[in-house]
Image (tube, rainbow, N blue to C red; front, side, top):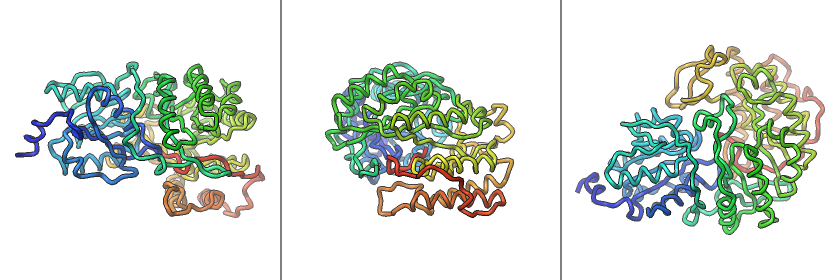
Length: 481
């Protein structure tokens, strides 16, 4: 019996007929598997899943599947997912291959012209259920959020009746990123209390998908998911919301309830600089309920760059946010995009001087100093007046539009900094055997490279006097995209 014929006689509700795969979720236990698993199980399907960040692809599972869904919530996951999709095609030509998540919607044209039969964007879980029900019935899927080779749809942006994620059959938490503190390390769980974002930063991949909307996950669903991970050994929780203060009226009652139920549990969140200033009175309560650090997308100290990216904050705001976090007893971990078409060498040197002067060397993963502006298909930057002079064609292999800095020294410096970070072992997970170079040593090497690019002495004494560089709480997987 041929493979397509065998598939046609098997039910999508048979065990293993649906296979979900995740490739990368920043070192976290993948919500991109746990959430859709729960939706499918609630609909009567019996899916199986693999996290390829911790497990090898099981060819027998692929060959048995009628439907293979690949989670692509971010750029790196999509690049890995494309290779996985091609491997799935080799192993099982008759399977329906679906890519779902934030980057599936942005890259739908590329995916549907390649290995994918369908893509799901926005609030994808109900769309996934609808797609499988249509395939099961032999009808054409036409629910919001489902794109196929024959039919395109925008992202699904409707309220979702969330159910607690299903994690029982996924790998345990011990194989994922850990919280590292001066007192030791802790096992980390991962949840989302909201999705989407109210803001429209031009370089962010979320606005093209959500258009300024965000959706909250009910408090009881989040708490049940946390409880399940605590039962698996979680001692710290990362809230993966794009901005935890998009809805402070939802966020604060949630962390109060979390702390009341699990008083020993710590957590971290991501909050915009703008919201740290607007809701400054809430920061002490975050600290009281267990928040150890806040990630904030500072991006640049150049007000010119910040305006071009429509970040909604200034250099002075970054300094104020840092002061407020310190006053509340919370570590601030700013993230940066040092290499944009508008950033200068002086901007780079000032960024490094600021990090040193403010004692932030252990608050910034070295890979942050190598980040170059990514412009994926569908980016809000495309064809804007400020980016148009630099915009190049789409590099399908890199899944990003090319651009060249007007100062060649900046492109050369970015490549050199990336090489320094890679050599130091700070561009990959720290959960393996390789011990990364000390952050201060790596920082000095990066600073020296920037000084040399500017034609100056690489004498380390040129760093300004600064605060002591105390260790700060961090996750063992450096932030990336």
